[in-house]
Length: 392
Length: 242
Image 1 (cartoon, rainbow over the protein chains, first blue to last red):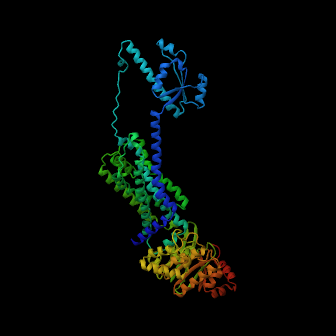
Image 2: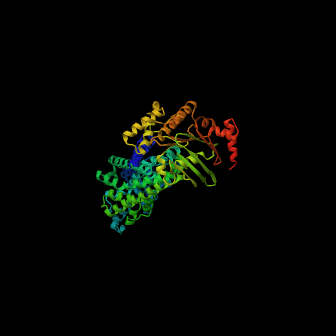
């Protein structure tokens, strides 16, 4: 036990003095998640506000042929402006990307309207351009609205109720709560936490195995009167501590970052208060042992620092797999999922963020199965360190 | 006291050691001499229990290195070939880490580290981080580190590699001090002159076999060469190809 503590203390001190390890544990992991998240949220927020509030400027050719339509557009936050003189010039302008949307009102518009034949209006846009298509959709919706309004007026003029045109009225009832809506976006948070956790111990896992071998300090260490199991366990314990600290920091940084994100404007109120931060830490903590032993195990097989880095970056991504599969297949949380590490933590975390009651049996299964797998991997690591081939 | 009895070791098809036997008594310096790839390092690695022999046995103070490797390691201080230090720790911390691992109490650790710092004359750089140390400084710290548990037997694998004249000279003094203190010192080298200047007994190995195991004079006599280098070459030829 003393040996274990000595190795543990040495690895912590040693790695604390290493800038790269420290940066990845204390800065990279905890900051990467919230920053990326803030970026995504702000982007979608900007877009959401963009669509409704921004006045859209649309050039219209032949404005004089449809003064009422121009008025209608203006009242729907679409400013009619002067644009290219001819239809050909308009097509060229859209093609070149100078304009996103141009409306052409032919000379015959007023006449056709008066004759009660469908009056032709042209909407020129590039449908392959998604940004332009969003603007085109707004104009199309406005034109459609004008169309409806005229149709109703005509029916009323003929003494027919406009209701005739609406045989079905669809009312959508949205049962999602603001917290529930958050879960969609915040679902990716659980991966950020797992990522930060793994990132925190990655360099330590490399340094204590492949790094130690490459430096030539492994062989003298193994020739000391100490059992290898103890050395291994001390190393894994140190990796665990770095991972746990990194996890805690990333939870806290998210807690702070969420305060500055205008999520209410997106109709989301994530349930991520101090109590949830603490609960999330305890739900995710069992993953620390698994992550540390898995990374140490993989790094033990590699011949050099660089090779270890390559393999461990794959380990960084691996926990996303179960989460991804389940979200693609849109499977409902079930008991069996709780046996799968990373997936069980993800599902439990989503429940917490949604502010839904967390099933304690699920928590118990998640914690115990993740710890069991972690313990098994630790045992394999210790076995591996008894082999002589370890020195490469 | 180290006894090696007919050990064999192969790595795949390469037969690195093919029946090496010799004794290294206490209070004497035994040199393991041989060209590159002769099997010196493999033999020593088996002795400090990092490798297991395929055949044969070896004992340290009578303790079998395979059956009770932990007890054997307690009696060995080993300096592996190209041993590395922890660059983020100071020289003193590097030595203290090994002392703690060997189970010394906190007070004993300080005392022991201080003693070794004096013995190996590393006061000047003892409190600097080892990153950027010269080869000579690194070797001294590595040797100090391997002596933390005051082992009866000291195994040094090519300790003089990459050292300049001054560093080699002070290394030689350290080895002589260990001998005077009654330790059994076993060290390997591929430089005949170095071994001749220091050793009481020389074991020349080539192609995984012992060519000659004798004193310097004995080797001169048996090979019929006065010049040590010629004697070395002749002894290697006596073994024949692998």
